[in-house]
Image 1 (cartoon, rainbow, N blue to C red):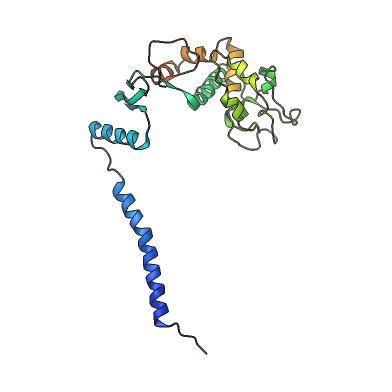
Image 2 (cartoon, rainbow, N blue to C red):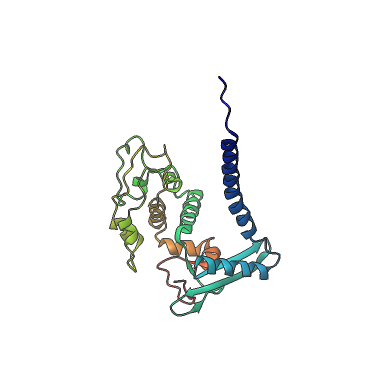
Length: 245
């Protein structure tokens, strides 16, 4: 016998569906209305960025719009130091952070281009004093390229390593502080896993080959203009610009 759905049940079901669709549609419409229109001028862009700083409780930022022929707009917005009410300007230095990974890679590639190392060189060959553990080292050594491609198999740096912020600590001292994360969990080169300790080891190799501090090598070479204009590498001796805090 064919069952027929009562009209009241059908109407109730349709009502619930309409309410569900309405509940989904309303936030989407609101979200669309809240999306700012693309800025039509630098003044509008500045206003939008300042609103973002206020909405996200971000103290300050640096911005640069650069064309092929040179900079179009370089500025600082907000505060570089909330405690002293110091404004962020186009002269404010920001800590370079993970951008240093690019400089480590560029430096290694520069040295490789000069024939001073190979990307396929085992790390133990170039920096035997850096501790790491790899049970496949005899057949699958950790190579320089693995440091740059996050394929060493090492775990990411542990919290204890991040927590250490000793002024004046050298790169080697930083690597020696806690090395327990530098243990290959699989054959190097077979899997990618983001690892913050690979680039510092690469930077240390740069120091070993050049006989210079990594920061000094970067500053004195092609990266000089980019690195020194908008960012600061920790432990540099330059004091003429106010850093972001």
